[in-house]
Image (cartoon, rainbow, N blue to C red; front, side, top):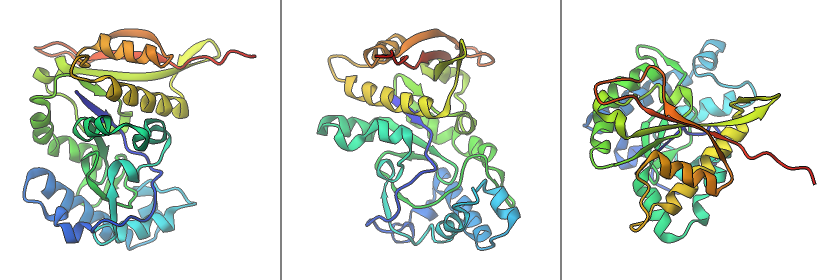
Length: 276
């Protein structure tokens, strides 16, 4: 099983791991390494100029823009920490890797991929410096990052999917645009949305969707054992129901058809709080 996650803009500062320059990761000779080197160089170069245009291109909020630009300038030389420790947003707080038992943490290292505007796709334990580069950003001579990564990630992701079995896609829309399964890969992908009932209708609500995806990822990783592997969309439904989420729909994603069939789509509903 593979679990695909979006990153979080919220990140822990600091770290005690070697920098990317020391590790040589920014100059990789493979497709992914070369693409990362190009993006990181462009990000560092443009982040040296604190202008309204740069802030807009990188989608930086006013309150943190100066610090974010500083982190981007130093991205190759600042200390690192494992990716799942660096990200600290709602999804990753719910996933809570640190509290998992040792066997489940090993499965997490093997099974989780985090998509990133700056790095393309990250493994759970990959060394990661502080930075802020959303997939919706636009870089000089590169353009929109989602489009750039869609080309660069096709081959690396195809390799990862060869022996993956089920792929549970929990990415948000910006990060889902960075990689779309090829026709022959779609039969193994289950795309999941988490919805909340508001004013009588089911809607995606950012905080509850992120929390629900983190909790679901945690339950899937805990459940995926040798005797009870997570193999099907129905197994994902069962995991969701164990943590209190109802299944609103299990069907197929619109516009995802191909020779091997469309992508499976699963809608989950946040548990309603019953007044005491």
